[in-house]
Image (cartoon, rainbow, N blue to C red; front, side, top):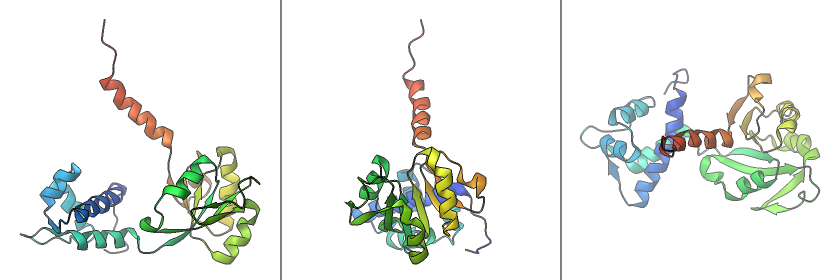
Length: 216
């Protein structure tokens, strides 16, 4: 794929699903699959799958379909899962602690190399092999280690100042769990913002249609 070729956000967001489903197929010792069969598994259309994969070269063979292992490997490379970007996490409360202990960072293309908090009861604790550092050490750590990505799990009122600090430290890529819009002040940043309550409210919208009270 050319660096200048535009790939829509919708296609990019489907790539992890392809990677996950192909991994499940490998676990079942399935080595080959057609676009039609993969489409049925993923509730997509065969045409959609072919269009998505053609953005990156196609990978299929007419009359054969897709080699599951090779396709998963190629999608992993497209996503950058082999890069292991150095990552820090700031805010080791309940949410940050849960992520650091349960997310497969290595399998998702990242290396969690440090965590920071300003709570003296948390600083110095070890979670999943990583020692929590004092947030006051962020600048010195970044200067020595040049991390690529920051995960923000801090209260919203602290997010803007923290983002400004991290941008100054050279970090411009964020997995953002705060309600602060980083790109508003830093349009050059790469940001994946996750609003869990937005997802919950979207579920609420769908549930209300099937749980509507009976009309009197």
